[in-house]
Length: 235
Image 1 (cartoon, helix red, strand yellow):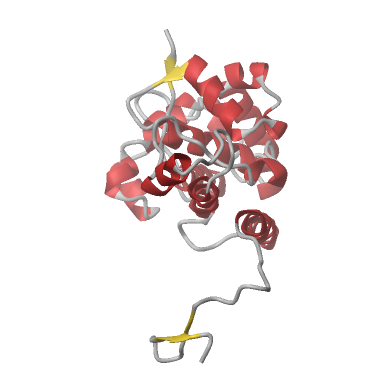
Image 2 (cartoon, rainbow, N blue to C red):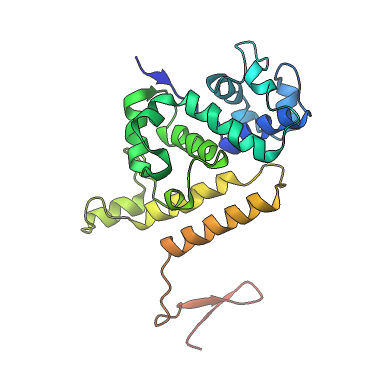
């Protein structure tokens, strides 16, 4: 029987881990503690099962020895520690794939084989990829590959396919979906180190260049004006 994969928002899971590292959280994880970290009520219930899956909390919500290891450590040490945690928790995926170079489709297929759950699979894979990237297990090349959730094509993607887009070819919807997903990595407390800022900016720049082509020959039909209205570029 497949294991149920967690699906908490990756940024919120990482903010809780970081709070334990910094010592601003200790003891059992409570609803009040999650509110203090700006975790929305709609997703707060997903955090404890996620950390339990990672081996960081016991069933009654108390920190495990593995979580205690990171207390007071630096962000650089957090990266190596988290890599070990993620590889151990998602062992079947890492035994099957070279995750650092696997496509998003390959990761989805691995999740199909090894994990189950009632949540949309895109949430499970999104959490996995955010954890991997924070742990240094995914490079920027992997980050820009499109996500293709099973059976979840948007109206735009369906229209493009009906108009003859070759199966397997990147659609606008798939490219933009991958671009939007990268914003899930922004820190919920709006704070991070210069290193993480620079790495995120480099990745989002590469993704934008991949998703949107520059066409110097075709000016936009309308340009935004300073007062919020639009005007024709031909005027």
